[in-house]
Every structure is written in structure tokens, then in C-alpha cells.
Image (cartoon, rainbow, N blue to C red; front, side):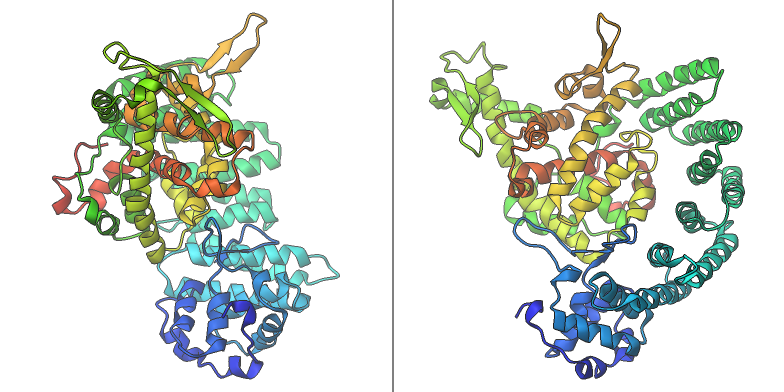
Length: 602
């Protein structure tokens, strides 16, 4: 029976023991409530409440705060509008009887966004989200869940802040947020306070001077403690307020502080690519300050020294050969970790690997030596029957080992290799991770901050793209990540001291295209032949992937984005951005028994 067919009365909902439900939860958050209600067999009321708790909370979207638990090619999880009118009416009536703040906030919010209830349900949701946040702050280890509930309550309350509505809700929440910031700003981990400061700036809680001064206090304190990355987050928060007040002098002072943080961060690294990336970000920050050319030139020389030391940092992890009959089982074992970061790193680095391009070529040549089918050439057609690539016939192999026939065979084989990786390793490991962890964009923001593959200001694209992939929405993931990969390749070339632009005779400049970047020696040296070769096959090769062209021109049907190449591309992006975190993972997570299975270091 589908959830649309479930018919539940108010009396059946009231009959559920809410205290017992809470006892079944490790923490009173919606996905724990989903499991607790789902464990009650034979109850349509419990089934309905479990379904309402299955949706992910997306507090940054004021009008559509609930997203499906999963998205696949031909189906997705529930959204608020999937519930029947009868169910929504029963849930709305049940709201006033709910004693669990998390559940009450969710049911009231669903009633509001589906228009099953009046504006009073929005007011009820705001107050319940605040109560849920307070409870989670008291019992939970993570600040992420409370922050999400506070954000949803704040964005809702902004709708009713006019004098003729309920300004008291916004004022009450503003006071609570201000108190939380003031009480938590000097904690060992001030990310919670910084997140609330950013929300305050967006939604008008407090004035710009208070936000700027508080952010500066956090930044200076964290810098003195050697926590440069948190200090940078603090200065960036202060910068938003300085921009709002149009204080140019203050903006330049802050950019100098940000540059100093990046330089200090580079000194805390072991040299190499991450240190070079820190220096490049310092140079970018100083470029916002007048009369800093000499300082930037000096930093550029330091950056080049770090680049020389980097060698092949981005491709030193390897995984052992695995028995094909056990590959799914092994991938599920390999991804098991202590927390979300540990499992995400294992998914990106240890579970699978980019196809070995040299091995792929050797395999293709061996196949051609043992077969004559390739001599007759061939054509490759896309999903609409259009010929997109042709392979000429040939009679001699000795002088054509780098020719189109070899490449054609390599691209057929890489598709098989990617299929095995996606179905046998990536998908099973991804499912295992998602069973154990809820994806938080806040957590991903911390993981991806100052990544050497991601230019400043582009972090949110990668956060969104990786989040979509973790949730199974590879259509959205690819549309976000493919343009960003091309831009990141330019960034990589720039970090290697190259200028990825072309100067035309009329004085205009043009950014280098994707094909040029994937053939650029500096990019190949930085990322390694295997990563670049896999990107080339997936993004621009007409025989196998061609995703960049197909997506840009709208050729691909939606279902194709859930195929092998798009999923492998998403994983490959995750692989690239997780590799620089290898040193941190080895230091804090790597068990002794993996010592012989993970080679090299970052």
C-alpha cells in the first residue's frame, strides 16, 4: 500500500506512545524518529508518521524545506505534497497533541507548506523548532542539527516580522540567537557561533557593527590559537558586514588579515600542494588591497617553491586487487569508519580507484594483437542514432599504437572498468554510508574548506554537487559539477604557474577550453595521468562519455545521468577533493591493519 492510500484518524495517531518512541531514539532528530515509528508493525498511524520523518530538512530553502530521502532514475523518496489530503488533515489536527518538539515542528511545518493548515501552523512550527534546537543543544554532540532547526525557524519568522503579523516571534528568536552567539563565540569549536552570525547577517538579526565586531573577536582568538582556518571563516563573516556598510578601509584591513591567515596556514602544512594553495589564496586576498604588488610577488616565489616539492601528491593512494566475486562485500567493509568524514574519505579514496590509463592501453594493444576485428574500423552512435565518432580501418599495428583504433578499444574497455567500479564498489559503499549517516552541508563545508582543487568562492558548488550525489541525485550533481571541474582545471594550471588564457591580436583574452586543459602538462603533472585520462574519457571523448558536450547542449535525456559515466564522474570528483586530506586521515583515522594497503602520503 502506498502512503497516498493510508487512511489514518486522529484517534489512531493519539493512541501512539510518544514517550516510548523517544526511548527508541538515540537522539530526538527526524531520521531517528523515522526508524522508531517504522519499527512499530501493524500500525498505519506509525507508518504515516515514519513517512513524514523520512524527508530531509533543507532549512536554506524557505518555501520548500523538505526534500526526498533519495532520488533515483525512475523513483524518489516522499515529498510533502505526496501525502493525501485526508492524511494532511489528520496530521494537522494531531499537531497540538504532539509532545516531541522535533515531531511537532515537522508536522506543523508540513501543514504550513502544503497549505493544509493556516498561518498558525507556521507560528507553531517556529516555536517548536526553537524548542527542538534547545533540546538538541542539551543532549547532542553536534551543533549541526540545532543550527538547522534555528535556521528554519528564523527563515520562517522573517515572513511574519511586520507589525501587523507576529514580530514577537522574530524578536524572540533574535534574542535567542544573540545569546547563543555571545555564549558560544569563544568555545573550542566556534563554528556554531559563526554559522549563527552568518544567518544573522542574512536575516537582519542585530546590526552590522555587532556582527563585524563579534566575527573579528572570533577570528583574532582563533588565529592566536593557531586555528587559521576557523579564523578565515571569522574574517569572511566580518567582511560581509564591512561590505554591507560600504566601509572600504575596513574591507582592505580584513583582506590583509585573511591573507595573513592563509600564509600562516601554509606554514602549518608539510609543504607541497596544500601549502602552495594556501599561498595562492593569500595572493588572491592581497590583490584586493592597493599597493601590494611587491608582497604578492614575494609570495608567488614561495608558492613556486612549494609546488616543486609537491611531486605527485594527488595520486599516491592505491588499493589492492580484489576478487570480483567478493567485490561488493569488500567495498562495504572498506567504507566502514568511525564517523562521516572517515567514511566519506574511504568512499572517495579507498573503495575504488581511477582506471589505470597505461594498463588500459596495454590491454587494448594486447586485444588488438589477438584479434583482427579492429582492422575494419567502425562508427559510434549516440542514444539518438547520430554518428558522433568514426574509427578508420587499418592493417598495421606497429605504427598505430597511439592511433584512433587503440583509443577506440581503450574507451570500450574503460566503460567496462567503470561499470564494475560503479556497480561493485561505489554504489554499494555509497549506500552503506547513507544508511549510517545523514548528509550535512555544514559538515561538507568544513571538509572542503581551502581545498587545493576548489577556487575561492566556488566551495558551495562542490558542496551542493557532492551532496546531490550522496543523496542519489546524479542529474543535479552533474549539472553543478561539470562546469566547476573545467574551472578547477584552470585553477590547477594557475597554481602550477601557468596562465590558462589566450591573448588575441585585438587585445582580448579568452579562457582556455576543457580539451586544452586536459592536455596541459601542468595539469597532468598535478593531478596525475590516471585522473586526467579518466576525466578526458568521461567529459569529452565521443566514444565513451562526452558528458560535457551532451549536458551543455541538452542532448542527454534525464535518465542517462544515472548511468555509469555520470556516477563515476561524481565519484572521481569526490576522489580528487578527498585526496589532499590523506595526511589528516592517516593521522586521526587510519587503523594499523591498513598500513600495507595504503601507500604513500599526502
